Image (cartoon, rainbow, N blue to C red; front, side, top):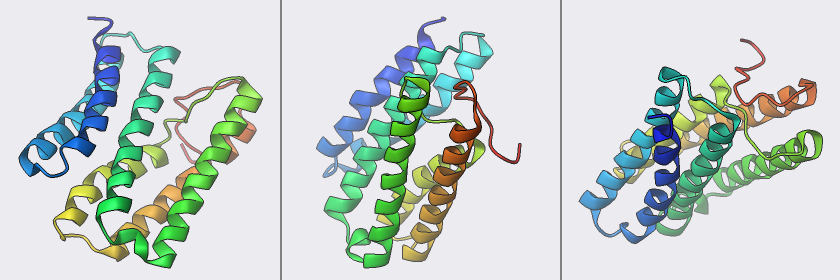
Length: 178
């Protein structure tokens, strides 16, 4: 039972990659998408529930999240008109740029890669997970996406400030205001 959270996390990587292959099969795509989301929520819950949280699991979770979000944004870039708009594209690329800066800063300062699991990062992840299908189904519009990108930008800046202030790396840092 102690390895189940890491197994779920690792499973999210091939599931994420399979989304690209399933883009033309809405039911299979939706099922796989739900599996990705489920593994993302279950891995952390089970790790805490069974007291088997580890720095390895936290790093693995960040990697799996990176794969999942990279695939989602690849699909949005390639198969929608969302990023044809200059403002949306520049805001999004700004977030990506600062995320890369944060990863480089984390490696330089703490000699490891990782992303903090702050409330703002979790909120960004949840909003992104919800927005993807809603945008595809044309339920949420460009304004909602820009708002989510702004939340992502805030979370990225907050993460940088926290990384700057931390003496030792703690992926479970909750945020500047918690």
